[in-house]
Image (spheres, rainbow, N blue to C red):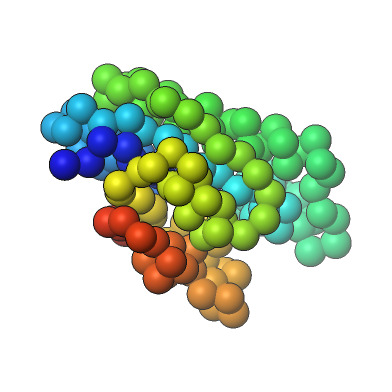
Length: 148
């Protein structure tokens, strides 16, 4: 039923759940899993502030810090997949709008399912812009699954 699954990841607990659920489905349907992460400097700054007293309001992270955080998030998601007995077929990481990048990756690999966390680290910004999962659900031309 689902041969290629795209999972949007941002390092949040709901993102981790999305990876686990995608792995469960991939096991049932022998699917390939692709990760999409769109690093957001504001999210990195917020996460650093929440963890290490980083001055998120006055100091944005450097490009290198954003790249480092993105690598950590995709590595952690890959490790979750491995714990579930699955391999990641590919990873997409690019700055910009997360919903747009998830849809672009879905089209590029020909995915037939997108799995996202309903609320991730972008929750603060979603109050103004709308959530990534809402945008993906609106734009997708394949099945979508939003998890908590």
